[in-house]
Amino acid sequence: MFALFGFSFIIIQCGEKRFKKITYEPISYSSTKVIVKRLDTVNVKLPEKPAVYAVLQTTAGDLVLELFADAAPKTVQNFIDLAQGEKDFTNEKGIKERRPFYDGLKFHRVIPDFMAQGGCPRGDGGGGPGYKFEDEINAKAIGLDKLKVKDAPQYQAQLQRVVLSEFNILSRQQLDEKRAEVEAAYTDALELPVMEILYRIGYRFNEVVPSKKAVRHSLAMANAGPNTNGSQFFINQVDTPHLDGIHTVFGHLVSGAEVLDRIIEKGNLQTTIRKVLVVDKR
Image 1 (cartoon, rainbow, N blue to C red):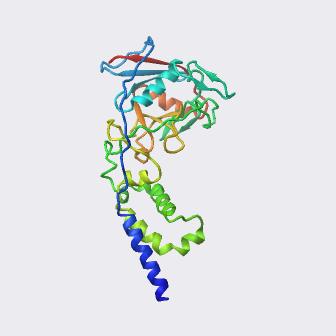
Image 2 (image 1 turned 180 degrees about the vertical axis):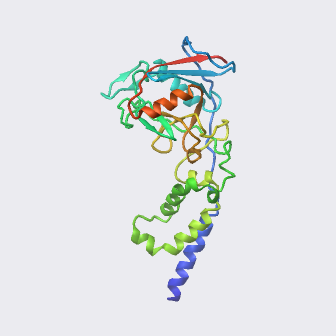
Image 3 (image 1 turned 30 degrees about the horizontal axis):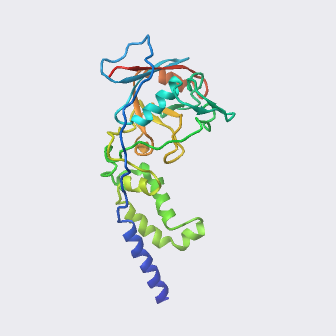
């Protein structure tokens, strides 16, 4: 009994050290300049602010978006090039194409009091351009280095995932066997910043771009985990703090809030993107 207790005590101490240590390291990142290869003409009024704008002409009306060329230049460039047909993608038949990607696609997933998601050529959320690219997020710029997990209940799922993963817990039986150690580690991990928790499950952050939070009317990339961006995007109807640090925010809706509400009210697959036009007013 004494030997067993001693072994458990050692594990708990190791767990405490493990979950009090900061392992985060920023990735190397070189910013690029967004280039709009074709200047489109639009019939809607754009803001006076010098910026790059995208106009999504949909069957429910027009959505005018400012694209964050400084905060997420590589993501913005990908969106523009797909929209204007300036980038190769692989279609559902496995054939490479180059044409305006978003024309004719639908908002396949809409959730009231959340967001509207588009950019899937299959219409079921499982399609994309045939490639994936990395996230473009500066976690420190949005305060995730200062925000502790204990003060951010929206990240509890990620916290649990980290603790269970680092103890290699794969079943209820394993959890029961190591419950004391896991609970002690969980308590310690509550003091870690959100940035550290996300880093431990695979998200990578730079310290260069002035990233934005996922607030109401943000335009952000949909993904299936770290560095799995492709063509799918969503526009927030409300603030979504649980998505900060997880999705690259690369724009903001500046006109057409009522259109977004209408798209969401209509439901899945009821609104089609007719065309995406891009205007560079920088």
